[in-house]
Length: 264
Image (tube, rainbow, N blue to C red; front, side):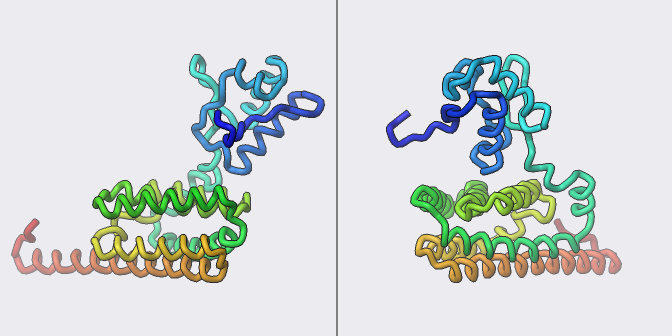
């Protein structure tokens, strides 16, 4: 590690009990530093870094596993459990996926969340947060210039996640991550509908640039407006895509009724 790096797992400085270890790892999970799927260091390495005995560490890891926060894979180590997906239960997710109205409610919900989050990020972002946001924006610009569709989509989610982290609000962070998880799974709508044309992708890049610029300038109100304008654009794009699809379906039915097979 370089002099500028931080060790996630710092030395336990109090009574060196398993409770102290549990608390430290819980905070890393709560603050979003450790994410689902992250692998913890091996037992020997982790006990050294925490400065606790291996029996104490084993007790702590077992307690975290019992709480559903960690998963032990025999012969492969210990991983952070998939706790984000539990914010929305599976029955609710399935229900949402079956009803179009849920998409409208999702956009409305995200519009307010994104506005608040961008506002807080502009006011609270640290130098490290700004570096992360700028690095993601650079990746988004490069993907856009190269016409790399999937890379641009990934940078989109990465940017919104990073803004959530820069807001430094734990509840917002995990709520947004749950929303983005469902979005990437296509639960609410397929993002390809919004990114369906070069013009739309150019508009979205400009919107992300505006959000980024406002956060970098520390202008909370401008960041909020830019984030909400971005969501308004997405809402309009989804409505247009849905309407176009319905028009296409109706036209196809008319052709069939006239005895003319539709052309692929």
